[in-house]
Amino acid sequence: MYRRIRELREDKDLLQKDLAEYLNCTQVAYSRYELGTRDIPTDILKKIALFHNTSTDYLLELTNNPAPYKDRKI
Image (cartoon, rainbow, N blue to C red):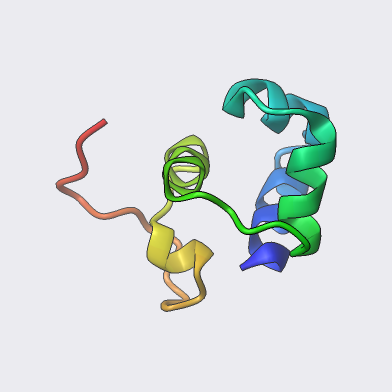
């Protein structure tokens, strides 16, 4: 999971501080999410999936399909 959130961020040429700002957390906290040294709370995981237009299943490596679910509610 941690590799995927880093790769998605890097694919958009964003810095950790950019995602931290969106998630309303510190850059240090976001960095720890990417490193896997801090568990990602469910609400933050959902926000990351919405930001990257993917599913939490993709982030959690339960699927290799990055496409989001069609009936998602924001």
